Length: 163
Picture 1 (tube, rainbow, N blue to C red):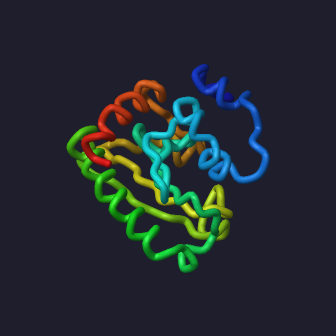
Picture 2: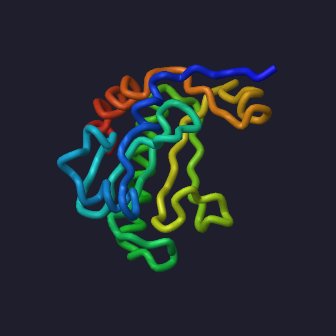
Picture 3: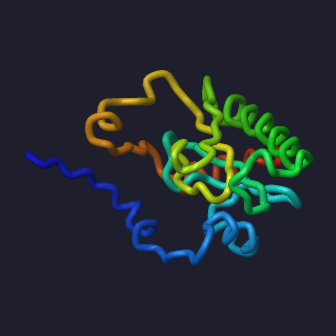
């Protein structure tokens, strides 16, 4: 018997407009659309944006404005800045969002699992005891237990205190 998961909140995303070229460069160039694009923070080197395919509620990414697929070619100052944002982001997820754990990660290259391999990005994934379940393994699907917009607004309100 085929089971159907109903997630009407995803219809806007699935049916949304396609972006020409690199989606991260699009976000980088369109600061006036930060709210619609779910950007939490932006500065001269990087921007921080909610992941549209989150592993858990609150999953976001730190992305340099520089379009590169090579971490080893990224300006060292930008990498240090990304690291500082990651430290603040971990504090924000633990202290402000209540996550007892956080995964950090970069998938460098498609073969390493990068969904958007052409532009490096650092994932910050908040974790809670028992936040995984059978549906991810068996159904190759994720269940997002809360409203994406509500999580965005909550994290956005915390940014001034942590980033």
